Length: 197
Image 1: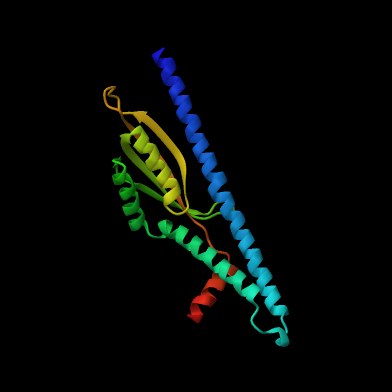
Image 2: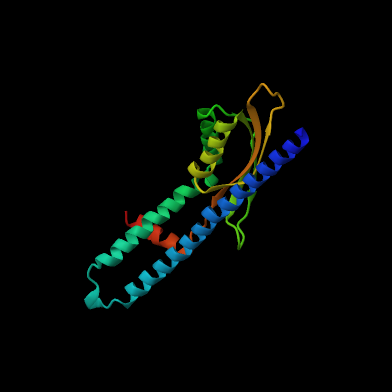
């Protein structure tokens, strides 16, 4: 019965981990790719509209100005989401702070960079060893995925520490912090605004 229960627990943990990985991809990477495509299309449309404006119509066009301002805000949000990838020292401090706030003990981090490809953005992949109570560990994993820029849990393995009297569990967590490259049209839109200020 004990080995059957252990097999059932392992299967349950595997299904949970698989769901977290699939959900992270579907809810983080795909929407960001669509957002970039939409933003780039809007910038191109605005540029086309602006180039079609004749000298007589060159007065302020509030609709275009509002749309450009909205695009700039979205681009700045994307840049803020990229910060964990760009500043590893601050990222490590933030992860440590998230763990400390929940009573989670962290082992050493194992970082690894992945270059961008056609299908995936660039990523800083971290392998973490974390120990703590199951509920706090679950909260920590959630915070990693939703409070630290563009991140996703790639893999997680949870197991008891071995002492039945101790409720502590140990988790091996693989998390990626993504960096989305801004399309040239969007980057130039923000650079043009920054040059005016």
